[in-house]
Length: 42
Image (tube, rainbow, N blue to C red; front, side, top):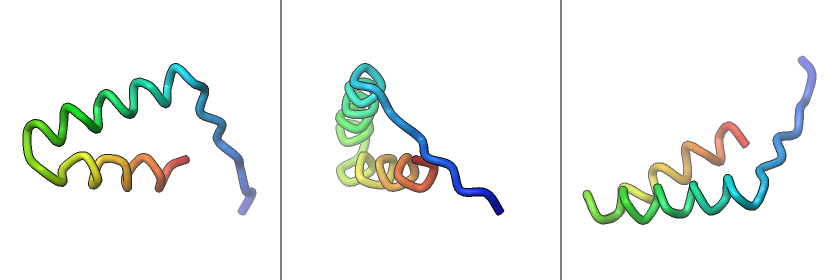
């Protein structure tokens, strides 16, 4: 299996943080779950 590196640019990091904040407003701790999922693919 080949190993790949995913580079996330500054704009994408900003979007991820905004989404994390939104998810935490919906349900406390949901943002952490979202970021964990992002880490799995990055």
